[in-house]
Each structure stands twice: as C-alpha cells, then as structure tokens.
Length: 417
Image (tube, rainbow, N blue to C red):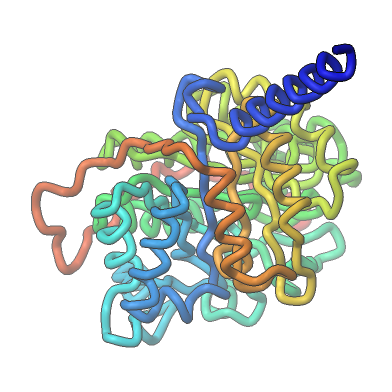
C-alpha cells in the first residue's frame, strides 16, 4: 500500500511538472503579460538569398507562420545602402543601383505584403543607424558629416568591421535619416520601423568642430577631455533622445499605428558606452516595444539581464523581449540552450526574438526538422499581434522627402579657428 502511495505521489509530481513546463513553453502570452507574447526574428543581409527569391521568401513566411511567430524584422538600411528602391538615396546619389530581387521584384514590398496577408507584423529594420562603412559612398561624398574622436580619428571597430559614424547632431544627417525612415513607412504602410544599437554613438566620438562649437555655445565651455565625463555623456545622449522623439512623432503622423521598435544593448552598456538612453525613450513614449540584445553563450551570463530594473520597468509599460543569438555560421547554438533561454524569458514575463532567420534551423548542430519541431513545441499556442492597416491609396512613384528639420542655433566658432 505504501509503495502504491509513493508511486502515485511521484506520478502526481511528474504530471504537475509537465503541466507547468507546457504552460511555460506553449501558453498564450496573454496569460503572462497584457499584450501577446512577442515572437520575432531578424532577416539580415545574410538572409538575402532567401528574401530575394520570391518562392523561397513565401516558403520562409509560411514556415514562420506555421511555427506561430508573429513579428519579422527585415533589414532595409545596411552599409550605407538601401535594400529597397529608394528615391532618397538616388536623389542624393548615395547608391548607383536599385536593389531588387531575382525576379525583378521590390524585396521589402513583397515581404511586407506577404507578411500582412498571413497575419504577421513586418517591421523594417534600420540596421546601420548613424554607422557607415568608412569607404561607403555616403562617407566619401559627405566627409564633413562624420564625427571624430579626440585624436581626430574617424573610425571604430564594430561587428561590421571598421566603420565611421555620421554626426547625429548635424541637421543634414538627421534629415537623411528622417527621409529614409519616412520613405519606408510611407511607401509601404509598414507596421513600424526598428532601430538597433547603431542608432547611437560610441562615447569616444563628438570631438569634431561642429559638435565642439555647439557644445561650447550651449554650455559656455569646451567638451571635457574625458569622453566618459558624466555631463558630456548626458549632453550627447540627450541630443540623440531629442532627435528620436521628433522622428517618432513624424512616423506616427503618417502611420498612426506604426510600432517604433528599439533593439539596444543592455542599459549600462548602451548609455555609458553608446550614448543611447533607451530607458528615456521608453519613459517618454518614443518606443512602442523593446528587444534587448543579450547574446550570451551560456545561461549563467544571460539570466542576470532579464531581471534588471530597466528591463522590468520597460516590461510594465510596453511589449518587451530579450533577443537571443540562434546561431552563426562558425558558432552554432544548440536547441537545449535556446530552450532554457526561452523558458527563462517567459519566467520574467518577457518575449523572445532570434538573431537571425537562417540560423533558426539551417545552421544548428541538430537537423533542421528537429529544430523546427522544437520551435513548434515552444510556440504551441497562437499569439497574434495586430497588423497596421494597409495604405488606402497607391503611394506615389516618387515619394516626397520629409519637411526640412528646423536648424539648431548656429554654433559660435571655436577659439583659434
């Protein structure tokens, strides 16, 4: 009798654990947070072979729909180049060709249409932000738009290699970014626009003559020699925040339901090293959703970021997710680790986004069908997100640029030149 009771107790404990696990891995997100669970994936330049072929793109969207993803983030601006037919870059002679698919199609336009047809949010990803390859047409045509380090250096090392940085405080740079973003949102009626950790500036920069003169005019003193000086960091971060605030208002003026999505690094790194005060963006209502990039190789270094005060504050205000590295060509990620991270996210009421599409099932250590089956188990319950209404009229063939930004007060010349 005692043996039977012990066996029943064990079976009950196992069934309770299984039910809990199933609830964590497949329950509707509405049980965990007020809005549907964010389940996203980035479509990068590495995914262009899929995106450029119409049949492969349609098959990819169908797979993601079947696996109950709800948001796609396709790249539209990378390397100083538009991945769609952009009148803005042509008018400025920044690109001498029009990017199209293998069948001559507008890659982004067709992806947005296909995603909308199947109930997915498609939020174009403005990947490079203020970053530009040092040898790009943009950097070569407008060298005065680039900011500098204290020693006069123009470049830094990033995941994209050696890059230069557009000066986010110059009105010409702000106008270019604004025109590109409004072109994408206006032309396609996109569900929103996403900015990542490159909508920022490494703190070593800002010592170009324009910025030095502007800082001197506003504060009455030269920028501190220490790029980490608190007041100097705040002044530059606040300028970027003000630009983002104005840009978000312009986007919503032409697409009121557009999602302003931001995908930064964790807060201390983003603010102190990249001048990206994304918590202020959340508090000011600039951001409609947040995806924090935590690309850690193990659970121990990953977990502390989920419970940070900044992430939890954002989660209470807007849909918030933690971005997971699903793998790279030379560094695949096994499914058990991905599963632990997804479960950890849900334990904190957070959604999930994977970087990037090709590595979801094609670059992993397990066979693709095995990885797809695991994703299907994790996302067993639907979590549909609302899709922005399609434009009521056909967009013009030559989209108008945004009204000019009001110029800032002219900075006083710096002493000695």
